Amino acid sequence: MKTTRQKSSVRKLAALRARLADAEEVVRAIRQGEVDAVMGAGKQDSQVFTLEGAEHAYRMLIESMNEGALTLTADKTILYANQCFARMVKCPLEQVTGSSFRRFLSEEDRATLRPLMKRSAKSGSKIPVLLHAGDGSLIPALLSIRELANEGSKDVIIGMVVTNMTEARRNEEMLRTLTHRVVQAQEAERRFVALELHDNITQLLCAVLVRSQALANKLSPHDGSAKREAVKLRELLGQTAEEVERISRNLRPSVLDELGLVAVLRDTSTEFAERTGVSVKLACVQLTARLPADTELALYRVLQEALKNVEKHASARHVTVYLTKLGDLVQLTIKDDGIGFNPDHHPARQKRKGGLGLLGMRERTTYVGGTLNVKSAPGKGTTILAQIPLIDRQPGGGGRRSRTNRVH
Ligand SMILES: Nc1ncnc2c1ncn2[C@@H]1O[C@H](COP(=O)(O)OP(=O)(O)OP(=O)(O)O)[C@@H](O)[C@H]1O
Ligand SMILES: [Mg+2]
Image 1: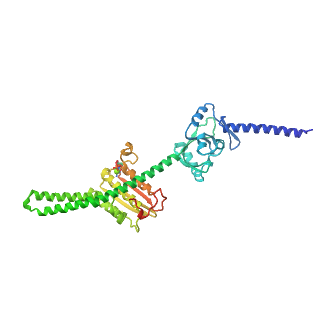
Image 2: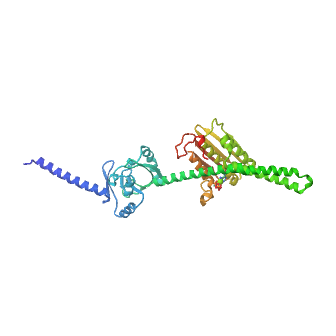
Image 3: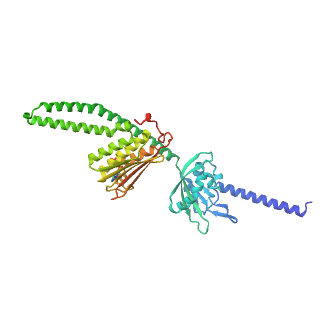
């Protein structure tokens, strides 16, 4: 015979089993996406978050998206995640729903995410993060965050779209490698043409120049127009030889290889000032040793392109060139007092044609681990600032090369 106490315990146990079975069924249905409600632990007690019937259509849309879509509570509990997100983080959907979004973030991203989320939810800006997937891999992603109106409830619901950036990053990397190869091929070609010009054309021109000088000397003043023609011919040949030499120097100045950056900056500035009539003030730090070859070449090409732009676009009267060294950072500044422009809206960028100068400068500095800044405004002149760190770089990101391993 069971006592009354025993009977009551059996009843309670049966009731608890029934509730557990119910709860398990609800949890299973929520995880499978079969129901429209999720229980979440609130500050005081549990809360039910519902999806209304009309949202089924949205859910279908979201499930068919190629991006991760999530809804979160304010404390980042995942109320809903689509299959795409589960695949992205390589985690079964039933383990994603109900868990905290923070588990997919690094310590660092967790710390930076909180203030960014607030800002982004209002501005709609995107936050770059590295997601920690279930298999331990790291996935570069962009988070777009919006606070969703949750009518009839004071609880904030956050909507999040997660874009997998793996493919985009891979393409960027490939593009960067390709650009670098193009720059290397361009440098090799320039060097080759410069040598050909210098060794063959200039030599030939010099020989012709000497002959034309001899001819002019042989003709006496009595030969009148013939003598004048011979003198004129010699002058023209002299100018042609100088022009060929200038082109050859621009293609690849031997002074860069032989004497280094400061010498080539000085030569380039002097030649520019003499040819264009624009005054150039040059101030260079005393360098005790040569910089890495790729850094010297990058900085020389930046000056060359910047001066080309001054000549072509700026209508400037004065240019100032500074080479400074701040700790392990070498910095080249080229400042003109010309007409300036809006770097965000210049015509070349809008029409998506031409305009390779600034792009090339940026690519070259980025490849050697540096940055390029363009400060300009209409009527305010232009300042180009290239900064390159003098530290060992990883191969592929412009690994620091020995002097013998120049970009030829
Ligand atoms: N120093 C400058 N002063 C005024 N405008 C400039 C200056 N530098 C660049 N710009 C503006 O920026 C644009 C882009 O310059 P960029 O060097 O990229 O291309 P580009 O000079 O037009 O063509 P490319 O360099 O390929 O021959 C120029 O077309 C010009 O409008
Ligand atoms: Mg240009």
